[in-house]
Every structure is written in C-alpha cells, then in structure tokens.
Length: 372
Image (cartoon, rainbow, N blue to C red):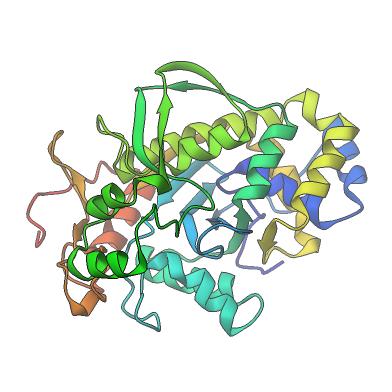
C-alpha cells in the first residue's frame, strides 16, 4: 500500500464496497469469520487519513447508452472524524477537454472504455479530479441491473420519503427509441425544429411513465429503489440535482444498514447470491491485497456520519445560489442541454474552493454574484 495513503476507506454505497470483496475473491469467508468474531480488528496504520472514492452508476445491459454514467458521486472518507462526505456531480456537466462532439461528464467512462479495457475508470478519475480539485484514490463502477438484484436479495430497503414524488417523465427501459406511432419523416422534421427536452418528452410520451412515491415510510424493492434515485423530473421541487442527491443518500444509508445487519452477514445463501449477482456488475481499480483493509474499516465506519454536497444551479424558490449555470443553446455545446460553471466554461476554480471549504468544516455560503 502506498506510504502516502492511510488505510483504504469506504465510499458511497459503503455496503457495495464490502460487496466488492464478495464479488472479487473466492476467499471471502475467512474475512467474514474474522470480521464477525475477531474482537481485535485493527487497522494497518494508526491514523486513517482522508481517502476519496469515486462511485459511478451505469445502465449496462440493454439500457440506452449502457456505459453512460447516470450517477457520479465522489465520496470523501475521513476515518479520524468517522465522517463520509458525498459530492454529487450532475451528468450534464460540460467538460471541454473530452474528445468528440458530446463532452458531457457522463460520457467519460464510455469514452475511456472505447480506448481500452479499464480506460473508463482512469478517464473518469481524471475528469472528476479536474472538476472537484480533489485527488481520486479509488473508483467503483456498478451497473443498475446488479444494484436492483442486490437490493432484492437482501429483502428490499425501508426509507422515509420526505415529500411526495411525482415524475411524469420517467423513461421506460427499452422504449428509448420508440416512434410512438410517428413516421420517420415526421420525427426528423420535429427534431430539426424542436430541441427542448420537455417538448421532446411531450411529443414521444409513450417513452415515459408516471412515477409516484407517497410521503412517509416506504418499503422499496430493487426496481423501486432504482427509480427513486434516478428520477430527474419530479414536480414539487423534486426535479433538482439537490433533491435527487438527498434521495440517493437515503438509499445509500438504508442499503448500508441492511448489508451490515446480522441477517445478511451471517446468511451464507445471501452472501453466495450476492456474489453471483455482482461478480459481473462491478468494475474497480481496488487491488485484491487491499480488500482486507476495506472490509475492516467498513465495519469500523458503519455508523459514520454521512453528509452530502451537490454541485448544481441552485434553487430559486429557496433563494439558494448554485455553482453552475445552464449553457446557452449553441454550436459550442453541440446544441445540447448542458451545465457549465457559473464563472465560465471550463473554469472549475470556484467549485474547488467550495469543496475545500466544506470538507474543512466551514459554512461556505455562496453569493448570488458569480464573480465573487
């Protein structure tokens, strides 16, 4: 292990990082035995430092754009303070240094994988370091199919939904290119004159469904949990990246608690089922000799405080400034709906300062003046 790093720490989806051990090694049960029965589980170094783990979620399988990252979260783990800070990065953030016409950050993993196997994680790490100003020590990529099946295996998740969620534009898997009864000529003519996502959704309504979650206690199976965290067009204030991040944090916490419950950890049938599900769903640059550090520290930090940061455009209703602006619809951005730093395209300096401030424990209020 590099001398300048302390013990490998857990990331967002604390439980998923434990499941990496299950999915990557046949010798899991000695680790499990020690984890449960060894009263003296010790870290290899005395003082854990801050470790950053990048978590990527992709559609995989038959999803539209299977290697596009729908979820991008940087987890900063502070072992000394028993704290995990999750920074959510919107998938529509424009990254000028990416190759090709579409330079959204959610393209980085896919572009890297085209170059070479394993290049997706390497390119994603480099891009996220550029955006956040934080070093990325490790990365984990999981596809949605694996996540859904894993949640079902552990018996679903129990969460509290803060506000009723209605999303009338949730995409139906497999219908991304459905013509909805229109001819090819009609579609080409419409696309040539209309660009707004809302108008496209209205025109091709057969591609979407109405997603609904009542406020209050809810039990979610795997598919419901995925829909809850992926929803991007909720009404009643639930369509923002900020609201989406809060929902993700709820699912992360519930998943962590369920995995660390005795009913999962000491159930051989569940462990073997999780292994079978996740062995082909996870990509990571975590080395096998580091797995023991992960599982030990994951257990030590199972009650860690989890806080979230969101890099977004702010909230006008609550007068909350953001760090991003919607880019103008023009050729520079390939005529796509994208987000750019409010201080200028490709200038992530303000984002660096804000994240540094928050990680150091400051209040870090944002002004409405993008130049301040």
